[in-house]
Length: 560
Image 1 (cartoon, rainbow, N blue to C red):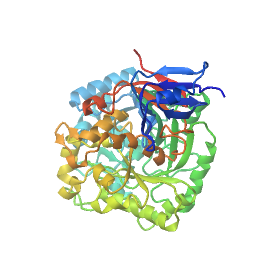
Image 2 (image 1 turned 90 degrees about the horizontal axis):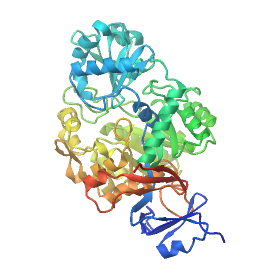
Image 3 (image 1 turned 120 degrees about the vertical axis):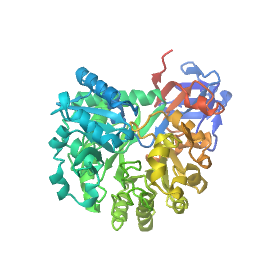
Image 4 (image 1 turned 90 degrees about the vertical axis):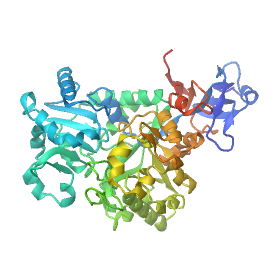
């Protein structure tokens, strides 16, 4: 019998397999895990032709999995005008826009586009208009897009192109009027949220295929360098700059799927991508036929799966957007946000997807949206026990009544715990506007875990950093610039290691192939520069990946 292709010995190996979570060594054959065990056990599987790697006592673990990342969008923002959530004076903002215009990084055809804007700018909508509707900017369509990708500010020239004016407002239903900000004179002031932003996105010049391909290459390289070997793209039938929140998909709505195909064709998709298709929140079961036609166009592509759909149940929580759906009204507007799904029929849609064998991944930020998302999944579970794992992502506010529902409904909590911090966002843009009771259960990770929920790690890149190590450390401390955000909701690091491995594999429908170093699974694993099992949280956040293997092949090596 021939020896293993490769053995890695003398390490501190976390397998994420609870039957044998920590071992010394691993053997790889034909791109899969052949065995794990002690140095002696694994060395016995080697022969003269086996590649031997001495891990020198370093930590090795399965490739990490991000259960909610808009990777192509993230790759694009690495090479285009972006504020990176930094707040500067309007003088400095104008200076940067001028530079980005001149070097081309802000150009979208004849329009200017800047991403990564902190929501703190939206309270200055009138001042933005005074600055960017005059002088050299008059007649130049400009849009500043929030880092949350739900909000934006568009100048008068861009609003004119999108048809956003007083006449439009009179024709809209009340809920949609709330997605367009108004000035003191009752006219649009440029601030946009969700469906309002969609109107501008719809008139932006499309990006060239070559630009998107470079974005895809950036995304794969970035994720591999962070130790990520799989992710769920929750909106793969939407491309950057296309309307998303009120998307009414057709079979031609292929979004970034051609980018993944092009990467795979070149042998450069060195990660598993579970690509979800956005369904309109008020879709009916028959509408899924259209999405299935999109799925069939991208069937059989290496390392790309299309396991289901993503649905927006609501918007975002922070002031001034406040489009997340709440049980108790916002204190300033006395409104409850916008529930995008129809509770009377949402369960039918979830059940219809479940019957097809599709997973359903639901964006729910407000506590009412979380409740109605669970109600929809509950109907599917009543209709059948399919074994399909559904998930809810973001979970910023969750009412305690919902904590115990996740386990029996087999719903995974896909959480961006990098956001769980006492900072300007949670304390200044959220806390003053929601009830004290609701705020107490913000990103309630430990409460969900204690009630048996399965947690999975996620970044929502480029809304925030794709770095999973920073997110793990944040889940452990929940510390921010202005204090700790509910210390009772802190998690231990072992929970986070499983959240980014085995649990995440379940969330993307790949638990039989990846997520743990179990015999027969694909050999996706990473070598780290420190003992992540014992270092303090600050050091955990600064972890560097030395090498990444995908299918037994080395795909990333850190520069010395």
